[in-house]
Length: 185
Image (cartoon, rainbow, N blue to C red):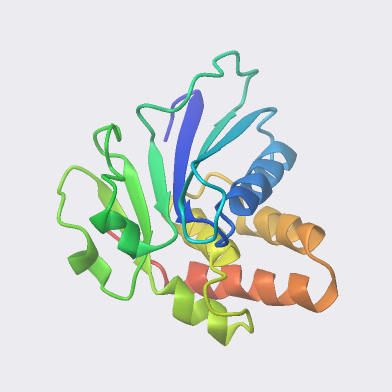
């Protein structure tokens, strides 16, 4: 990813923490030398389980374009059931990266125009001590493995800064474990 602005679109469901994950990633990016950071959530009905989309732009320079992301460099999918409902890869740039929480690996997505990264984040997050369905910080670890533009150490600090005590440690462990177990193609 050599572009001046890196555009990341997150897809999740209400209650999974997509907005918090994008916020944490944005904070870590800013602290790692990306002074241009713009984040914008988009969601319909505010209910648990409803689709949520978050746009995150990071840049080494100031970002003046506040438009929604139409052609992301990276798409992060917190729940593979969304793949049945939404074309998450719509508009992704050729050679873009698709990061999916799935136990199915490559079988989860059949498109060939993207680089794919997968991990069973739901399982790994539970192993780290998080409640079922809390996958946001694990997805940060998967994203860091697939697109190493922000150091994992900076992301772990941002995670621990977002959550207190034991929750911070469990969320950081979820990111660390997922980073180690993410498969990239």
